Each structure stands twice: as structure tokens, then as C-alpha cells.
Length: 320
Image 1: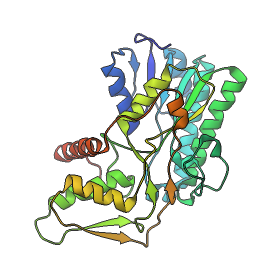
Image 2: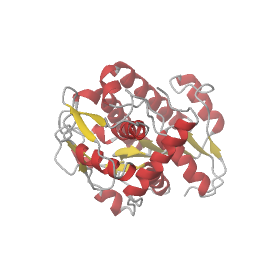
Image 3: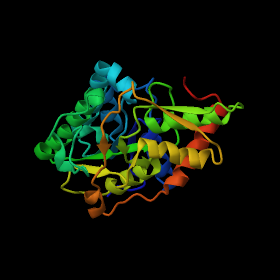
């Protein structure tokens, strides 16, 4: 059982999920939280990571640090994605083992599963088929992390768990024009539309709008992380999602209805761009079995995320 006085290290505390975990821990009264800027600790540097973990000896590690991006960056910078993610997670997982740190939650993504996986996707479908070509480098790195945690548990009796969230969004997301995922990209486009004064209001979306996606608010992911932090369970890999899905086209319409009500917007689908995986609905029965389910209302989550973008935009904190 992790106590509120125990030392907890969040790797990637400034990212989307890492910052949500930090907010959650702070709200629950955890005071001994280790966080360090990447300028002071390069997670790609094995020696630095090993030294940091040996010196600080946290009781628990949330491994939320990763190189992430949307279809464009995943497809264009495959070498960067596979190298950096394998190095970051390997350094932390093996460094934790060397420092006798028994507890880790490793965070990945639903893209680890086959492109044409049976739906909803069960944890046992891992490695049962071909990956989506546009993000296979990232997926392979994350699969390596899962297998690493699984192997250390078997050989060394560690308590390394792997949570695989579905498409995650929320405050502190990446809103870059080319490197963001579809939800932050959509929010950015809707904000830009809200500022237009003429009647020519079009929104362009990659693909034909048919792929189905399950999305989850980042605070629910943080809640899942805290929930599983205190569990000693046999399952290494656990899906984290809502169990609900919509098509990209339906999401665009929903976001426009909530954020730009009473405005007529023309949706243009750019079919020259890839659709990605046709469908990704997670089977979340295992998480429910262990007592966790998502709680945040989707409309509330959309509004909170949009307000966060507006704040970041107002304070010139959006990277182009």
C-alpha cells in the first residue's frame, strides 16, 4: 500500500497524462512527489537515470514520459519515435530494478493493438495481427515496454503494471498544427473558426470521417493510475477507456454543437490524408473487474478542455 508520505516519481510530469497525475496526487494530499525538468534529467541518458533513481529511491514510479504525436509526426519521424520511447522506458524500468524499486505504472496507448483487431479489443489480442502502418514504430516501442514489465515481474517478482489508455484529451494537451492528435487538432480549428467574422466558415478534417474512436478525459486516466497504484494484481496489461465510441464525423459534429452552437459550419473531409485504424474500441471489462471505471461526462470534458486551450492561447503558450 502506497502511503501519502511515500516518495513518488512522475516521469513526464509536464505532459498531458503526467500533469493530470500530479494534479490528482496533490488533490489527495500526497506531499512527497518527485518531479524533475528534462533539462536536469535527460531520460535518454542511461547513466543519468540510473544515478537519479539510485539516489532518490522512490517507492513508486509513474512512467508517463514518452515521445508522442498524431498521424503526421508518427509516420514522418518513425526513427525518433521508436528510439526515444524504447530508451526512455528501458532506462527507467531497468534503473528501477537496479535501485530495488518494485512498483511502476507504465503508460502506453491503444495503438499497440492490431489495426484490424476484433472489437472490442481485449488485452489478449496484443500481437495477434498487423499494426497500423502510420504509427507502428511508436506501437512497437510501447509493446516492448509491456513485455519488459511482464518479464521483470516473472523473473524478479516486481509489481510493474501497464495501463493502456484509449485516445486521451484534456488540459495541457499538445495543440501543434501537425503533431497533435485529432481531438486537440479539432479544438484548435474550432477556436480559429470562432474568431472568423465572415460567413465562409469551413472546417477541414483529415480522412473521410468514417473511422471510429473511443476517447477519454485525462483526469479519468489519472484516477485510474491512482486506483491501480495501490493494487497487487496478476494482470500486467489493463485497458483504460470508456467503452463508448463515435466516428470522427460524429465527433466533429458534437464538438461544433457544444462549442459553436447555432453556427452553421461546413465540414470538409480531406480524403488525400490517411484515415488510420478503422476502429479502436477497448474492452474495459478487466478494469471494471478490478473496481475502476471512467466518471467524467463527455460534454463537461469537452468544455473544460476548450477553456484550457483558450487560456493557453490568451497567454501565448500554444506552440505553432
